[in-house]
Image 1 (cartoon, rainbow, N blue to C red):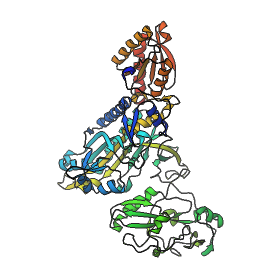
Image 2: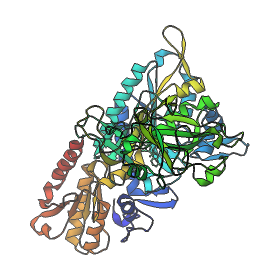
Image 3: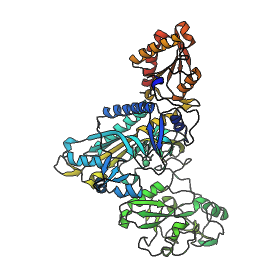
Image 4: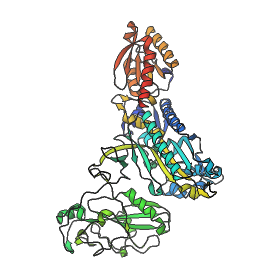
Length: 604
Ligand code: ATP
Ligand code: MG
């Protein structure tokens, strides 16, 4: 491609609204253009990168036997009502764009395709003989994200590969899951990315687990905890660890103490000269179930620990049927304004005990009249502990479960694992923290959708069973930007060869020099016919401008038809290392071909 004929506009300065390097660089180098919040145009250079990533994804998927298809983006609301997700997706979470057509029918724009694929499976899969089956597509997804940001990283319109598998038994699902684990690792490795596969939260759906593929980068929105021995890595949302040891209590008898001005764990433990590991902290949450009922939740946990709200949310979802609901739509720590909506009298905040009376909750049809009391195992183990006295400025010391306080029935692990904690698999290993960009997520779904939507098959014994499902997503556009986030320098992007929009750029320093032009044109034709994707910078610009642009757009090899041509050579500069060497003109094509193919193979 000739630069002179391309829509090629680069910006000298960083665009004001871009925060992270990859977003700035893709805008500056003319790869993408913002059209609206979280909505971007993929310009020709970007489209080539996206097609390369898609092709790698496609090859790896096909190699596992999965089949490509294309499902509709416009999805009837009825399907989502069958699965029970319409209200959560359009109202509660509000992630799905919805619309009404001229026949007054409700539709949604696909944020994901479980409903559509399950409807197809319900109609078309009859027998175990058709299983296992795995269909995937590469397509634009729509999600009305609360905070679209960082360019393609979190868009409202983005490209995803999503695949859905159907199985007769768990063993078959596990096999496909393992194949996908390998395929996803291959996709990321081939795209030139440093990544880590981590245990992930599967939400309240349960299933037998899920793995996220994290591209390691400072700008990542996720925190990953891992151990040096390589045996453990998990998203902090899911991570487990051993809590620090309990320090023995200095209190031997139960009594109430005046503890003025100690409404935090830190101040109370200083005041009472005790370790935070001796305190039972009682944290108040407010959750709304999908039938509109608000439940006040009191979580008792050891003072030095924090609540992991993802784990808490999963536990509350499991308890939904106790409140005649099926899921929760929000979870928050009630601020003073929120408290006013349900308190009958003012709460002794900072001094709450595990047995705070239910009559703090004002009678109201929309509010459950009793606190839901949960206790984390770290608090269960405590003896002679300190906790609030349900009275501002007072605590109790030397308390014990089932003496002064009834141990809540619901003992649930809602503790947040933190860097520095000891690992479960080996207490000598300490959890480390790093940041990652979630590029892919593979998931053992089980029968959630097949059951709600009635997608069954007949097994060998002639019995009708719900299909067992897996789902596997990878963000094609997010992955492409993540590659930039991992690979750039002060001058611009450094594309991995395998996903670079072009392999080489032939730069003519002076287009008024007929010999330079002639050699460049010849090389351009030769390289292209050898399958080396090449740009020809034939613009009437100063050499310095051309070099800067080539660096900015990050093409792996720059060939300059400058001074060296007097000796029958051209200068070749490797973008990543800036190594420059002169290569005889007639050897250029074979040399570059070798470099590019080995560059790609190394990643394979
Ligand atoms: P996140 O936690 O980042 O919102 P998710 O859990 O919602 O991601 P999935 O529903 O599992 O993501 O989607 C599969 C993949 O699609 C993700 O791993 C990610 O690479 C990509 N993806 C998800 N949301 C976006 C988005 N708003 N913009 C770009 N890519 C996205
Ligand atoms: Mg999301």
